[in-house]
Amino acid sequence: MRRLCVLNMTPTPFIKCYLDNGEQMLIDVFDKSKEEIMDHLIRVVGKTEEQLKQEDKTKDLLDNPAHFGYECARHCICEIPGQVPCPRIILLPNKMRGKYKNKKDD
Image (cartoon, rainbow, N blue to C red; front, side, top):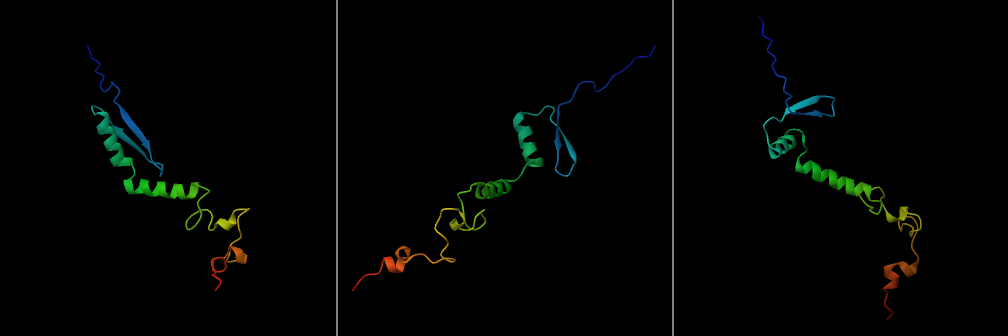
């Protein structure tokens, strides 16, 4: 009489990660606490703190339309319709220029 021995029938818990380059990574989480799993995931497939801070900084600069200047969507506030034209292109009236406005009569 033959006995049938079935092995590995109990499902083993795992996490499947899909990477950007098309690869897959299986991570065994059997007999680990949730803290150990999170630490391992952050260490293996997570981003560093510096990368996260840099991404947040660039996202904030590019997403907010009120920001203007270097590394933003708009270089100058004069590019927004309804604002005073840029003084490098069209000179401001004398009443708006500081050297005439703050001039003291002797």
